[in-house]
Length: 379
Ligand SMILES: Cc1cc2nc3c(=O)[nH]c(=O)nc-3n(C[C@H](O)[C@H](O)[C@H](O)COP(=O)(O)OP(=O)(O)OC[C@H]3O[C@@H](n4cnc5c(N)ncnc54)[C@H](O)[C@@H]3O)c2cc1C
Image: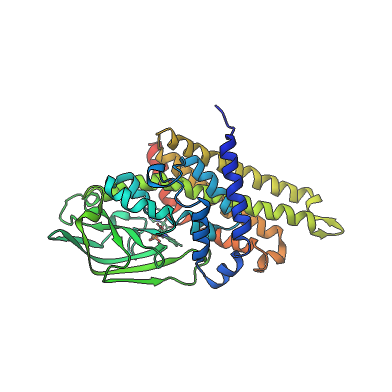
């Protein structure tokens, strides 16, 4: 067993962290307060090579492994989760193209994501179907060599800024088994019949774009099918097995960022004539925060490393995602408490971290869904 990162991996961490400090810090408060998606930041990230890092060289990306992508994600999230999503989620949904698409689809779409020419989205959740993915109702029915799509999707990241989305639809409604009724279909965002409504008033990650999307008789060529008809549900479960580890990395990074800020604060802030850091009660809390973060980091790195060895482990990925999300929420609660009243004011970043953290227990499978996956393995 060897726990040391390579020099290249350490360099990637440094590059990502420096990028976040330089580019995120001046933007984070404004984008949070104004719920503003900073398109220019996405452009800069593309130029720096931080967008679509999983995309192989053949399609214009650096072709990094899961561990490298997790390392980059973690470092970006130390500064701001919402802005990190502008960078790391700019290609969300298109992992499906790489995993299940045809060679022609890969060549057509993937280079655009890396070159800063396109943003994508993964549209699966519906107003009445989140955790129960197979409860999806949006239909894509064949009419000649086209699909006609009707229905609506909810909480879609990049919904109003994306150029295309990979949409989970019911294509085989008569199939007896409900898990065999779905397919993934690529839908260009400018097709007639699509309405995109930005969802405002999110508790956190307010720089990240989130939208409701309505499809009314939207026609797409059958050539836009990603993978196999009727296999969409299973493809999506595999997609989540891959992307969940990246959400775990978000949790590790966000928690580390909250600890970084708290360590600085407790050394500056004095009570009863002494820095907070001098009290053992405070030190114990910091020690507990650091320990939980390190535990979450280790599961996350192990899950990513195993995926790089070709052994994607759904239960381990689920453990990483659920545990890292919970650690992030717990650490941010401690961090805010240690900032006292100042922590409650938005001039101090720690309250933004506190609000941002909660989404890690909800999106890409709420933590209860992760526990179902873990328990299934136990039995
Ligand atoms: C900011 C944001 C961004 C998002 N981005 C995307 C995106 O890009 N693409 C996309 O498709 N979706 C996205 N989502 C949707 C997200 O993945 C869902 O909200 C999530 O999967 C939960 O679904 P739900 O909200 O319908 O909750 P529900 O499924 O209604 O569940 C409600 C609660 O009950 C729990 N629960 C449900 N079933 C069970 C059970 N059997 N046992 C125990 N507990 C259970 C859940 O864990 C949850 O806590 C996003 C959501 C948000 C808020």
